[in-house]
Amino acid sequence: MSQADLEARLAAIVRGSPTLMTVMETARALALPDWMIFSGAIYQRVLNHLTGRAPDYGIKDYDLGYFDASDTSYEAEDLVIRRVAAAFAPPLRELVEVRNQARVHLWFEGKFGEPYAPLTSTAEALGRFTTVAFAVGVRLEPDDRLTIVAPFGLDDLFALRLTPNPSRQTEGFARTAASATARWPELTVARA
Image (cartoon, rainbow, N blue to C red; front, top):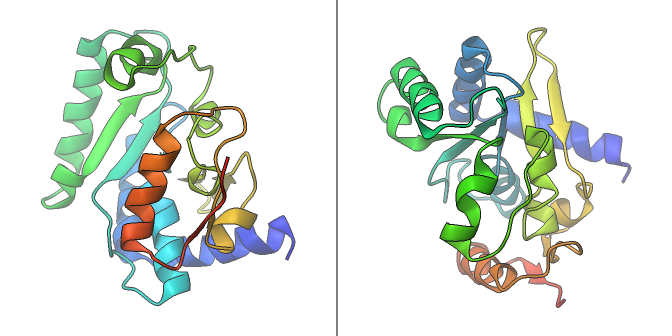
């Protein structure tokens, strides 16, 4: 199947999730710079669709990344976090997690124990995910188009295959794979 076909399948799954579309529509209205919904909010819906589970199964949060290098202080990010929280009603208010991707390099090593070079965009963050299949993000554009970013393509995701990111060999892949296969035992895990 071509990448265009896989993107069309992904778009249909995203559009078929009312909760995710509510998050996307609200994020679009906030007009954060270079924003994108990524991580489990996207890939878990595909896994759920392919394995016959409910669309929201396993969804713990909605990662909303944006990129604003003009002020990388925590205080500036916190203002955005509060603004986003105010835009959502419970329970989404507690589930949408906002992070300025221009700040990740400031705290990543302290939290995860590995260096993290500064990013230049939200999309660039996807290339650093530990698992190829999970490196996918989506933005709802003003004209209702979906922009899909998947630096490694969508083949692994739709094949239910977990492959380590070839440019980021870490112990994080084993933890990610173990967590994912506990929830979706249909997944196969490629060894590094």
